[in-house]
Amino acid sequence: MNSKSILNSIDSAAANLYVDLFGEHNGLSTFLFHGVSHNEKLTESIFPQEGLTISLFEKFIDSFLNLGYEFIGPADIIDGIIKHDVKYGMLTFDDGYFNNTWIQEVLHKYRTPAVFFVTTGLMMENEKIWSDVIHFERKKRNSPDDEIHKEIVSLNPVPVAKIKDYITKEFGSKALQPHGDEDRFLTPAELKEFALDPFVIIGNHTHSHEVLGNLPAEKTKAEIETSQSILTEIIGKAPDFISYPYGSHSRQVVDTAKEFGFKLGITTIQKKNSLPLGNKYNMELRRFNPIASNGKFKIDKLRSSFQLKTMLKEILQ
Ligand SMILES: [Zn+2]
Image (cartoon, rainbow, N blue to C red):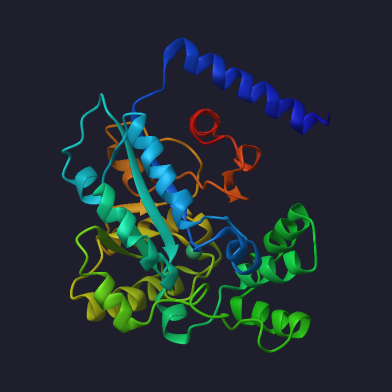
């Protein structure tokens, strides 16, 4: 057992003990997903990052409802109709994949809203996100997960145009093209129709999916502004919520987002949100990113989120 797995097992033991003794905290757990597939085989071969299938997503919602959770949308948080003695969940999907429309039936069945953060540039160009391409291509070549992660982290500071050149050189000119409905983005017409669903809430995920923390203020502003104007044109109103690509949210990024009047900004810090949120956390909402493989959520892949580990261990293993 290496030191990391020892720490992991201490963490889970502490988590189990804590929940046994004190029960689970109330508050808001926000969950981040990206793509969803019809079956595990497709997930593993085309969209391996999170391993989410439609049936696993349904199981996820059903299990949390059975634990007494109530799923809410961002407007419920802003309007302050939330109570402090309830466990809330909020579902979010980043990037704007067409496959997100496949979960509409599940959302209707459970009367559960979800927020979909769309990257408008990807939608217009229908080009895959560079980090997804690296993940997919390396996985196909059997690279270990931690090496894939290291490569993505090392490329993070590089401008997207340069990373695209690297991808083309490394994996060929078609690597950035989606395979089909499994991994393509929504078209503007599809987004327009999707947004009409009362359980679908559309949010801003910038125009080019750059790491905003790397950009000068002017560029951050342009990234948000372009996306906001395209989304307004398509769905008929300006989104009130933003998810920062890769969770990158420096002080300057948050301040720029505030200037646009967003009411919620969402990060990828894997923690639960205490309620009431307060002004600071409105623009830095924390969010868990559950990862599944072969029809089960992988507990050991979650970083510093012992409460969620315990919840998922109880209900999904
Ligand atoms: Zn994203």
